[in-house]
Image 1 (tube, rainbow, N blue to C red):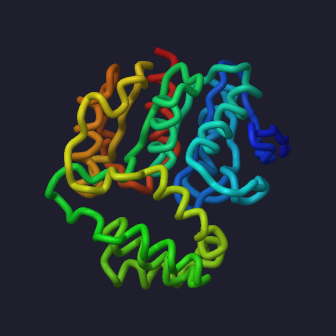
Image 2 (cartoon, rainbow, N blue to C red):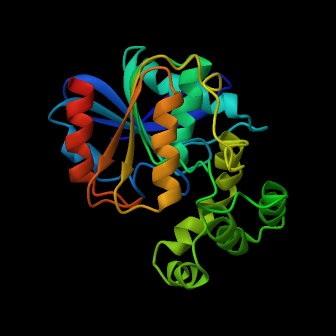
Length: 266
């Protein structure tokens, strides 16, 4: 059942909850919401251990938004959901959702422990850094309502997918939903900030995120993605890295759930 909470700026944030136990909030990445994408099936594997909260990030599905956008508003949205869960919760984020969780934790959102799966950072030369004017180009395509071209540019320049893979994605049934959600790519990229430069991070960057953290990558994911997660675990104040054997960025929710249950219950 869909419920609503109100963020600090008045935005209505839609969420669902299921299960029993300590609260665990799931945070989606690009193109995703409660009923579409990476976290859609995850609650069913966690519900016997946690009260699982899934929410639609602002501007997606059943959540509205009050403009102008700022990344701080997304932190406040997450805190609003956590408030519904009692004011403090475990939090898991995937991809750019993992970046949102980390930034929110550093900002001061009340997170007990956090798990992060493959935030799309670039910290070495194992792939090219984001192009000059990447964000400007992406923003202009969205402003011109060229959502399909914006998605293609994001996948090629932002993620590094080859053209033939992007062509296959265009032919998938999900393409229509992705086009509807394309404007929120701007939000994800604002959250990511300068983390696509190809430079390693200092230990000062997220020094306030002192809670216990599990940083996860898949053993079959791209080398640059594995590298950045291993590096991230070394710069966070209280983190460990875990390699999920046999998994890629499109992670199996049942396999992932077992790792999350072990971490949050430890």
